[in-house]
Length: 372
Image 1 (cartoon, rainbow, N blue to C red):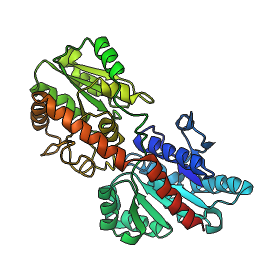
Image 2: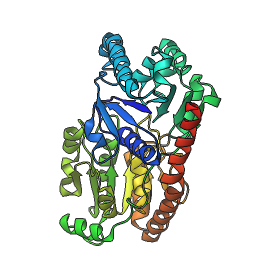
Image 3: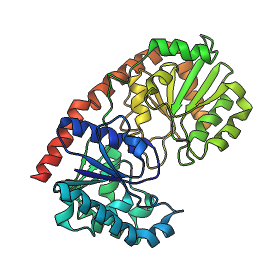
Image 4: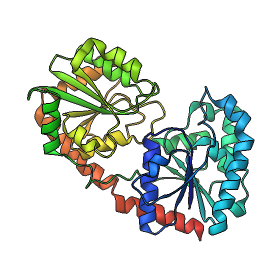
């Protein structure tokens, strides 16, 4: 199998794909990643081949993508031809829209079965007009489209993709590795000089403008002094968020992306808070919070409604309202037993839903069937 992933980013979907590829490799697949972020495969058994296919399709990048589309398509074809010289490709797995559109123009003898992975709801521009037509024509080439959540699947079907072609397979997250760490909790809280009665909110997120981390920061205006927010992540919106958080001083702390030790940071927090972006599929930040036995509060419905089941946290309505988010947080602050109860229920749910063995077996079975 060859997986093509060129985004120029190090986000949840990118890490989730590599974790999937590594699990498939261990299960018996022969996997190669064609991508532009070699750091992603560090510490894994996944083979990596560098390729530059330009930026992801966005409002700001589409003119550049339009100009570079055909040269990048030729570059992708050559890369696949090089891979196929060693062994024929049974499955080509594609993750982002640009490469998915390219797949419709690649020779069938070269790609094997084409499979798309959709990590979030379909962007609004692709649900109408000429862009929708291009997407649906390209989707005909895909033998299977794997959506990360039911809301993601629904968005594809609403756009016109045949329902029989779209299935849901959950993320893979290792529940044995990501779990509550009592020693880390004590160590971090001592480092942060947090008192026992202080409620610490933990938000693991890319610090990009598309994420509504501004809502979480603004909620601090409606919370008492004994509430602290820890924002852990990196991104081009960090400076703006730091400026926004300046009035709250040490009550808002910024940490780098805790790759490899997310459980330590979340264990030091009392609640996991997340502000889903409009197109969120199945945020790993929510899964991490659940596995660390933290009740999860999400400030928006679409990206979290499949994940935050009743009794494991709360979804704030209306979405992205700082005052309502603060009110929800306040209800947990005064009820530690609720935090404990919902945190434990969240871990039980996540262990069952994202079990590594079950998820990788379903992926392997599906891909093997397509490959004959």
